[in-house]
Image (cartoon, rainbow, N blue to C red):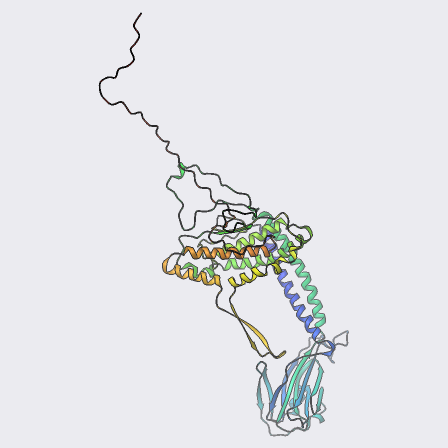
Length: 538
């Protein structure tokens, strides 16, 4: 692989990922800004709070200012404030009046000096729990509404709303009975809104679009270069010998002329006598079992394959991007860009080699190569390049037409999932998905590994089944990645060799040494036999 193209691919993936992250932040910020339209606030649920003393305080609200706000809390060049808070409360006893106020910390500390009160140390929702710190005292405070240091305050019966624009400084919130009596019992909720959400949304949106565009461009350039110079076109190498058995070698290699590798043209979708279902799919997956597998190596292959997992993360991200780009190319031209096609096939081939080595088959202990190209590795994948593709199918086959196959693939590769409900403070309930267990393929591979540990052998029937399941999955990947219009068949092709692969040409029967011609048998001993009489001399 060309280093320059690899660098483009990695940089493009990083830029695109960062761009997607910024766009996700822009979406969340835009939704939040939309929700607070018409003066709305993001609010918590109303919960009960109590204090045994004369007041309940939130003593430390520190709003730092780096010079970006005026003393009145507005932003330079505008009358807008960076944000506002809402405190909504009512006395637990409907007949009593509640007081809610915000003031400087120093003023509140002086007002409540020597007065018994409680500080709200922590609060958690779902489920609700409030933690308090009790401050002892012996003095009785004056009525809070008669104090003049409040930055904002409300009092009265029923529900009271205190709205306050954020200003720089150190602030404290005080909740009391309006008559300064003890104890205090109120139902409170809080809310917040910000005028900065809209400009933040616009900034994130622009930055995300720019980074995503640059990333996609770099990914396409890198993938096109790797595809043009890497895997090459589809071909059919001579297959290795049948899995689990050594090749026949009864005749010295020097005595048998080596036939040239025989290739076959890509198979067409027509009835074929060699396949039980009568059709060959143009995506071919093969894998040949190593007869000398280690009993224990499979236990650490997850660790050994980490370098491949890191590379495949970037490759699969690039494949998603190039598939989308190829989809637009198919929509307008009816053709899949050949270089992108070769790159995507190479990525899936790389993934299959790693999967065959690790926990989709455990078929070999030979470490997978770091390349997109076809090699002599015992696992291979290839797809015939389509000269034309349907412009209409590209809009529906990846998600709509593939749904039946995707459900089956989900069963083969997914885990057991359960759903449960729990309280959620903004809409009452939250559905939580919990995964447990192991996938079907994972279970079969685990059984194969355990059998391998105790017997040193891999059951061929189980290997054939795993190959059939993986072959199904990779055919669906081919279809979803827009590489072919032919619908994947609903059947398993068991065994190491794909029905569409060219089968190995049998070695010619040796003709050396040359046969010795038969020697005539001499006549048996006895009297001479009469022969022809010679003519008389003249």
